[in-house]
Amino acid sequence: MTVGKRRRSLAAAAAVLSGVLVLSACNDDDASGPAASGSATATSQAQVDEAAEQKTSKAQITISPENGSQNASINNAAKVAVTEGKLTEVTMTSAEGTEVKGEIAADGLSWKPAGQLERATVYKIAATAVDAEGLEAHENSSFTTVSKENSFIGNFTPEDGSTVGVGMPVSINFNKAITDKKAVQGGIKVSSSSGQEVVGHWFNSTRLDFRPDAYWKAGSTVTLKLDLDGVEGADGVFGVQQKTVTFKVGRSQVSTVDVEKKTMTVVRDGKVVRTIPISAGSPDNTTYNGKMVISEKFKETRMNGATVGFTDSDGKGEYDIKDVPHAMRLSTSGTFIHGNYWGSRSIFGSVNTSHGCVGLADVKGAGDPNQMAAWFYDQSMIGDVVIVKNSKDKTIAPDNGLNGWNMDWSTWKAGSQA
Image (tube, rainbow, N blue to C red):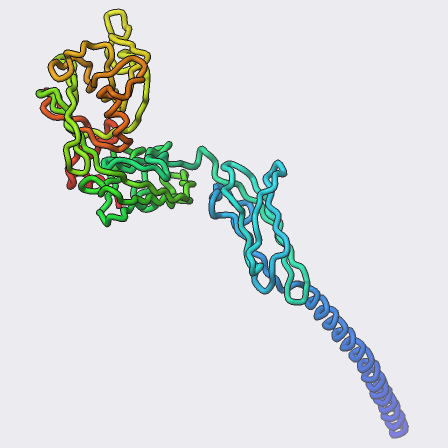
């Protein structure tokens, strides 16, 4: 009985084990089915991904400045470039919708605006390119150009394309104070076809002049290059100019006024061409000594003493002449060499009577070319030098007008930040 029971137990156990094996076999078969189905699904997805990848353009568009940029340059910042493709369309507009003209390069790899952008303006750029298979890529960007508050410019003289006398410096007046003078001067280059060394000198935080040791060589060409775009002249204040200016130096004319002798000797290209009788500043209102450069010419102009400190007890100008003929400015403070029709002819060459100017005989209306003042006016140009000597006054300050020639070369160079 016991043996029988044991056998039945073993048989039952065998049956159970047999069932487990069968189930296991069945499970193996079932596992095989789903595994094959999953593999097919993965293969299908890979094909879909590959197909999707094949439909994406390989062209890579880059727009400068980066999207959201502030204080962008108005000259060089806006650019579009592409790799592994060619640009087909680029549009640039202001926030108001005004389109900015530009041109895609012949090779299709780049685009830039045709001209300078406006300051303090939001611009948007949309670009399209295609790759070798003709698939399109698109890119967009928006940026803001530098504002007037965050930018500076330099107003320069002489003008581009002008012809000037040998004493004409390059003078730049900035509209904002410059604190990083080295950076700003580094963005400015002045050179002469004569090969003369040209050095800049800072008179203050807003004025920078350039000149050689001696006067410019007659007939030479001077080039001013302003490469100030993006230069930080002060904290958060950037330059925006990118410009090349050239001017011609004409014949050499240097005229010397001798206050004691009351004459002016005009020397052109090393030869005396005329000696003119003059009337300089009176003993009470002497004329500055020194080298002065003609900076402006007026066939007729008004001169009011009140504007330069010559007033009477009532506060009115000691003189107010509305039609001074043939006037040429020698200083910012009001020194001129000009025609004089109100004084007696006898004063020229014999008596100094002016308020500090140099007077030459002339007629009212500036209509007689035979007058000494008319002759000198016609023979002179901006940048010519007028030297005053033997006056009882001091030498004019180098920054009073374009008169840096009154500073010795070593001192001039010491004021450079190059």
